[in-house]
Each structure stands twice: as structure tokens, then as C-alpha cells.
Length: 318
Image (cartoon, rainbow, N blue to C red; front, side, top):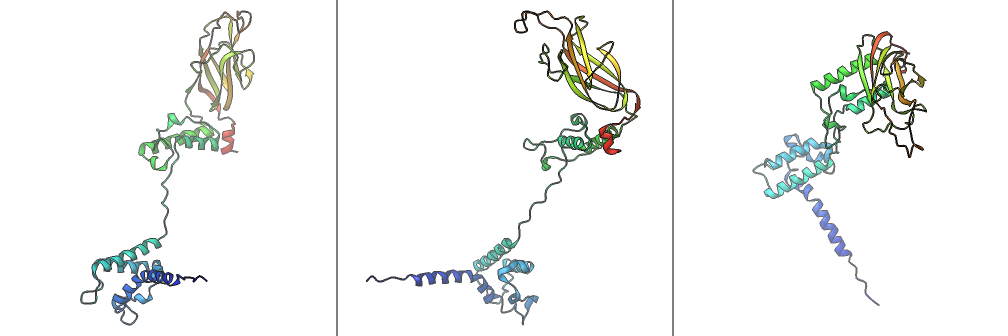
């Protein structure tokens, strides 16, 4: 029969050694501090027996004072039993570690985050339902690591505050309808490489080329339209202009004035070929078409009659 060998004594010795190591710091207090700092002698108005070493956060200020005294060599005082400097520094380091580990991590306070230009424009659109050109109204935002929406990179300056203040005043007047508004001009330009020899989706059937856009008219007033392109005075070309899907019959398609109600309106400008020479079909055509719509400019308001009734204004004044 084999004899079983038990290793429990070695295990007990290891546990005892670990326990003794963990108790070295309290023994420092027992040996060098409690003789004076107890409930009876109360030296320095301190009773270490009443402190909880396992939960130093309960009396953190007192423990921090003990660390400073030991670090400075003031405790234990001269003339009393004092350990080596290394022992004192080791006790102070262990106590500091306990204090540091007992402190809960405090999350960093987030920096004040303002809206950048794009976020400001989106907020105005969501609240009032109007689109604004922030690039023309507000200074450019600073970028941080390629991003312009990081709080630490969005600073403040007198010029920036003035820009946002001026922009907010313009927007507030535009929302309710500013009868003192002066004439302004907005130009819509077709892409440089746009092929205008075929029908463009969204424009009236029978037209080719041109453009479609939405324009916000600030007041009930007259507005001047100017259309520029390569159609010239070609008698075989006629301009087809619509406002909210309704054809506009104008004398001169290049320049005309029209009364329009306030609000957003859809406008299309296309080309109608009265005569168009071609080959067998469009694929094998040998003749190139002429005429393009390059720019549509809208000026106004002129002779305003009122702020009008718009969805944007209804949000503010029901």
C-alpha cells in the first residue's frame, strides 16, 4: 500500500507568510505610533486606534496628514523609537497607494460644445423649415484632426459671436417676413459639363436641357427673372418656363418680371426645339443641337405687398 504524502504544512506556511506580509503595515502603527496616539494619551489630538486602516477613504484627510508627517521625518519624533528611513518610506508609500486606490475615478467634464456651421444650418432647417447659406453668413470653423465638430476645436472669438448674432437677426426677419428687406440676387447655374441635347428627368415632356430648382421668395412681391445661355435669338428655339408646374407665358424669356407669393416655389426652365434637323434617329443623327440654359438669376423683391402666408411663418405666428 502506497503511503500518501500530504503537502498541507507547506500550504499553511505560505498562507502564514502572506498574512504576516499583509500585517506589516499595521504593525508599523502598533510599534511606533499607538504608544502616544491613542484614546488615553491622545497626542496631537489623534487616536489611531479609532481609524480604520482597511477603509482609509473614511478618514482620508487624517491619513494624508500621517503620510506627510512620516515623509518629512517628523513622526515618529526624535528621541522615540524610530525605524530605518527605508521602513518609514515604505510605510508612507503603501499608505499613499491605499489612499489613491480608494479615490473613485471622476470623469472629465465635457468641454462646452457649440454648433458648427453645418449643425447650425440643420437646426434652422428643422425648426423653421428654411435653408440658409452658412458659408456666406458665418466664419469658417476650425478643424481638429480633420473634423470640424469636436468641442475642443470649436473656439469662440468676438468675430464669431458677431457673425452668429448678425445671422440670427437676418434669419428671424426672414422667418416672419421683413417688409424692409432690400433687393437681393440669387443665381442658379447649370453644371459645366451638363449635356443639354436630351430630355432631363423632372422637366416638362417635350423639352431638353435646362434645369429645375426650388427658390424661397421672402415676400409677396414682384421678382425679376434673367435667363442666360447659348440659345441667343434662334427662331427655332423657344424657352419653356414653369412655376409650380404651371407654364408661364412671357414676352421675353431672357428678362421678365413676375408677381410671386412668398414661400418656396419650384421653377423649371427647359428648351423646346420648334424645328430640329436630324438623321435616321437620335443615334445616327448628324446634326448637333444648339442652345443651352446656363444661368437663371432671380432678383427682388420689388413692390412688396405683404409678408405672405408661408409654412415657415405659420410655425411662429399661427
